[in-house]
Length: 140
Image (cartoon, rainbow, N blue to C red; front, side, top):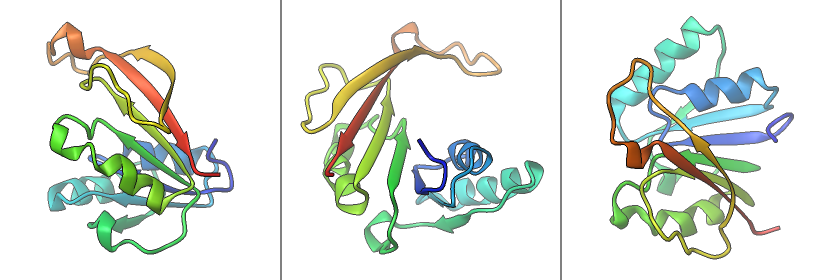
């Protein structure tokens, strides 16, 4: 899904998605996060994994062309739901992973799967958040 594409990892956190995309053959990757500490984490994790990608701190000011935007665990607050529309303005395809929103109904986003997840080390998170739903939307 990412090979030879321009990818944005939105809400990048530690940069794990950005790193995985580079390793999977993405042409260009941008890790985007508003948290300066998260961007610092992305830089350090990229070094540890011997990969390089770009950083950006403001989705609303981002104006490069990308093929796919990936967002994981960014819908924890209902105030973030309008981001779903912004994602499609920024990229023709969007993948979203979410464990928080119940009764997800945001066309054109459609469910494409579920994954049982956990943290390492185990942070003893509530079982209700272990099931991650995967959604995809496209404007092409």
